[in-house]
Image (cartoon, rainbow, N blue to C red):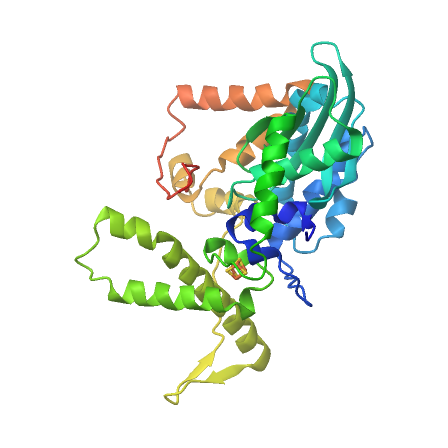
Length: 365
Ligand code: SF4
């Protein structure tokens, strides 16, 4: 059978042809991808106890967002403090291969632990959101780990997924029975490679998406379904049924918008069919720098403290950052909590609730 890239297993589970052989690969530079790679590059030496040069690693990823990577790295380090006990003699970036899957795991721990005995653990950092059930990916690592090192005396291989963005940790234990069942499912799914297609939201990660007839049909049907839906027929079931299709169409429109903007920026203008022209407009927005403006507003324009307060918006994260900078090395977290609690006690903190649509794990249909 075709050996599946371990990281592709969650999507292969959804569509057998996701891993069909193709003579091209789509590689798009992106901020999330660079954030992910930079965070992995920072965590790998950290786990081995090697000093990390944050700036030097970030330089290799021009699309990465420094603040975002710093946040992901910080949660990774804090998670590792709690998890390191389950990874005796940790190794990073270890290739695990078997007759089913091949891939590089982020952390591997092998050794003896007082409370558990002989232990084999695999850790996987996730820097993105949860788009698919990743159990198969972890199953792939555990299966290959068993093939490479054998089942430890404890009778289970532990896999740990650390969702850095979500601040969540998922632990799974794989015994022989679970791993054999997993291998059976993968082999059964592999029979559909090249013949079974299951289009859906996951298509946007697929290298074959631009020449997949099944995906084209699904998108056409999605468009038709949305157009045909009467605005009066917005029953909960209808809205739920259309969600993945609407999302796929929105992603397509986002891609179109990105291409349009970069083309107009490159060629200057585009002639529209009705004779109008599409050009890149530019607007200048002004902002006032508090440090430079502060003395002038008070001395020359008599701004009172209340006037100043009306002009300023305070950043909670900057307040916490400065509190942490002023605190001793081991008291930074405590300083952040204390300063927010004190401000809260005098009514200086506003608690605002925002609602956003979030997709949560449920029972697969
Ligand atoms: S584009 Fe979608 S349906 Fe087509 S092979 Fe890829 S995942 Fe499957």
